[in-house]
Image (tube, rainbow, N blue to C red; front, side, top):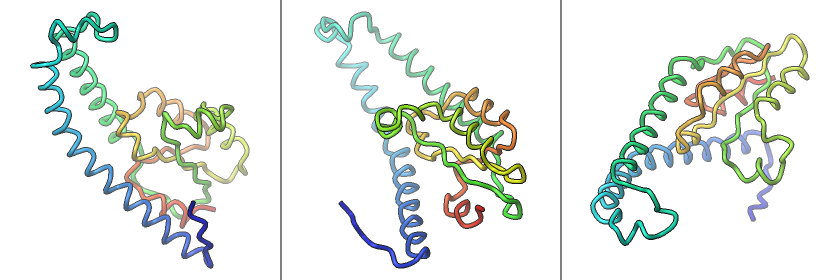
Length: 185
């Protein structure tokens, strides 16, 4: 366990910034490497795995090359549609002149939400409760977790529900959390 003691807020910010940079690099590397690996694994599966011997196992019952191709194509289209919605509808500029509270949406599925805090698994409800609890002259700035891309983003209906909550503004994952922390009230 890392029990490092911080002497100042600047040290904490420096640590968080370093962590953010690591996450961004990991996501960028993962996206490009994963695409190549997925293509290679998909080709192997189509050519070698979906044979009669493979289909004898219960979990593979009913799988055909065509169904696998259709399912994978649907996943790619779903991810593209979700990412397109995010890029068109989530804000990309932070209004640093306004008073706001920052809430980063948690990655899901995530153990700490699902097991450690089961009363907070519905993040839309959590956001709604926070928005109702803050002073009326404050806004709640909500930002998507950048690593959610690994899970093909969330359905656009999730983001629309957040956008419909009074006093809440939804931001694109590309804005640094450090910027939110620097300017939040």
